[in-house]
Length: 408
Image 1 (spheres, rainbow, N blue to C red):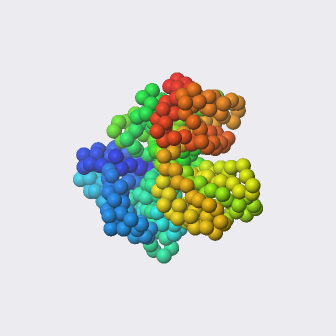
Image 2 (image 1 turned 45 degrees about the vertical axis):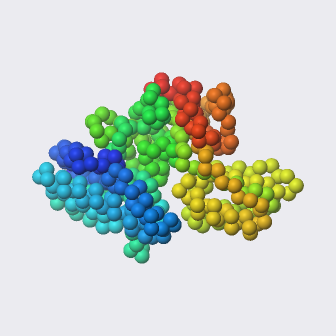
Image 3 (image 1 turned 120 degrees about the vertical axis):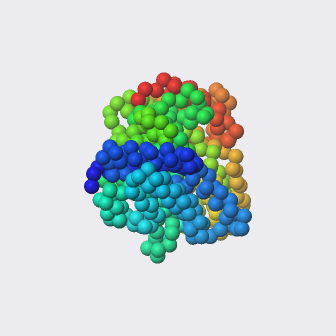
């Protein structure tokens, strides 16, 4: 085989026939440069959302197995159409579903994890000179059931295939030119970051930056897969996601992210005794629900309130569990708050710079933005605020940390 390159094209990149033709041209250009090309595609445009809407019209709480069967069709359509477009340019191409190329997952429907990949079929087609197009976002469990990898799962498909094929680089094509210091739709002065560490990108992705799926970055870091995030609509260099290097530590904040897709649940009057918290969160974990922030109030007369945040997509399931657990432990009430947002600052330089938290809190306070919950790690600080202040908070923090001047 020649040197391998993996491309991933997001929903906006394959939204129309003209865009698919443009992508086919880009793939052929790489083929002419001597690369073996594997292209991973998302569903066209808003197809996934449209399929979800269709499902909800017949069942407000559809079974996750059937939901995966339905949602996987979107990527199958775009993979077949792209392969046809490449063929129309005179180059042999073949389209596959995720399970046809040996992507084996666990059985956690709607958010399955990849267990292994058998890339022999792809390698065979590449040796025959074909361009391979793979439907992203999907795989198959050991019971031969179709599974999906969660929203943004095509990123994970691409990164995993890049690892399996020992690709030179995994290029993620999207509707923006790379990773920015903030969402440029909120902050017009946001700067494109030329190089960003896996850890910073992982934090930004998990904190609301929608450029890439967090799990795909986690996978890339584990296996050292080099990623280049770039635009589908021009040939400008984008952002390289890579191992951390020394000069990255000189900049203490790299980006600001906001997530408006979280909700807060509070279980009131929880008995303050050992084992209660473990009971609550083990029940939630059993349903494959990821809990983000957790705050337990100071005990009062043997009782306390426990608040935590989850993705809005998991809210109804979590509330059902929380109410059941509240009855089991004799708690008084379950309160739901879906009018929150999480704003975060991220940077590997935080490890060696003091005063970042104080500067963040002061900037928010000066703009009358109240903080309800706080979470920190070595390289990030997150605050839960009212959703109505989300964009104001991003602009405030971008200006406070002078990210419009960032050069990296």
